[in-house]
Length: 224
Length: 246
Image 1 (cartoon, rainbow over the protein chains, first blue to last red):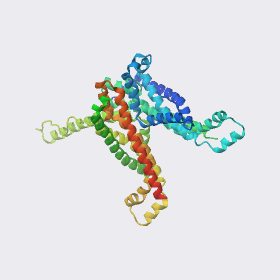
Image 2: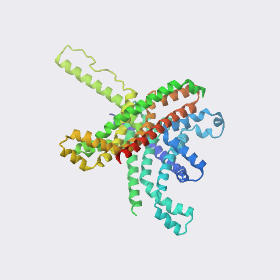
Image 3: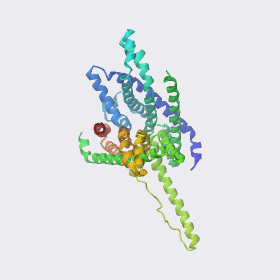
Image 4: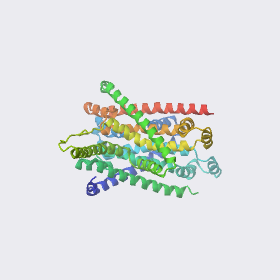
């Protein structure tokens, strides 16, 4: 065990840690913009909307994240019209593709969480809101959403942890996240044990910090 | 589409390999999960500590990192160990037979196959999740049942196989099902350590035909087929169990 490798290369690992945090938080945030409308519209009366959302969720929850990333990153090169358009600037960039894959993936899983909690808002609260003369929109953003978000927190913390773990595949498509940093270190020194162990420890710290933060939130929000 | 047809056989072979890896690691995961759950519920502090360390560490580390660690790191560790053991054995031999010439008692280079590394890693990861599932299931079996079994003079092994196991599996089934669906998708990662599963084959085919989208989409559909078959089967199994119990 040669610890000097890790201490020598710690700036690279720190850069990787920062990239992982940035990538995961950004895609989680963007994923919410997909998940909340998708979760709500799952109970829409329009069959076309319902069908489209069902297909989206079915595909992204039923296939591995790695394949989704490969379809976006490698697959996009197959289409000439894409290569010739301005979009190609984005699709040839590993960073953009990883962000897109992670966002679409978390969007689908989070939509399922949203759907689950929205369907189970206590009826009494809805009736009370109706009795107050609230419109449907007001009911949604004053009663249904705050109540649901609170109850979604435990399931969502699991999703965040899955995203931290899932983001490790970004290291395969040349991005220097924690996994990418470990791969670079391994290639430089041929010391897989040290290189990947350091990455494992970093991921562990990150995961347990997130679990800790969510516990604090749950304590505060679930008090009432 | 024509490219897909010419690679059909080899792609399906890769799909079969994926199924093998998934099923064998599920078997290992169930075994490790049972051990982990029993250790967590045991009275021994040491066993409890080891099981807690196991499940906590796995939840903190991504599957990809664990796989790379076990495949590459494990390879080095095994070879290092074999090298040192060889040296030690030779020294011992020299000590007793002065004319002893250095020889390799153990193979110089042990090659861990990506097939076994993949199965062991995935089994090891999901064993931790299974342990949590089984722990909950074991705790939901009524105490009275176990007391009755003890009163009948059953030994601990018999209590487990005849009373505990059949009843806990009913509670564990939904959890096992969820873990299986996640496990199935994790198998895609074995392509990264070089196993010729369908992801790797699709990658090679994509490289030589310049049709990456077609091939990766085909793999995505095969995975969708696997998960759909699994969910249908799991729903059927759960329904069957509820009918039987009520």
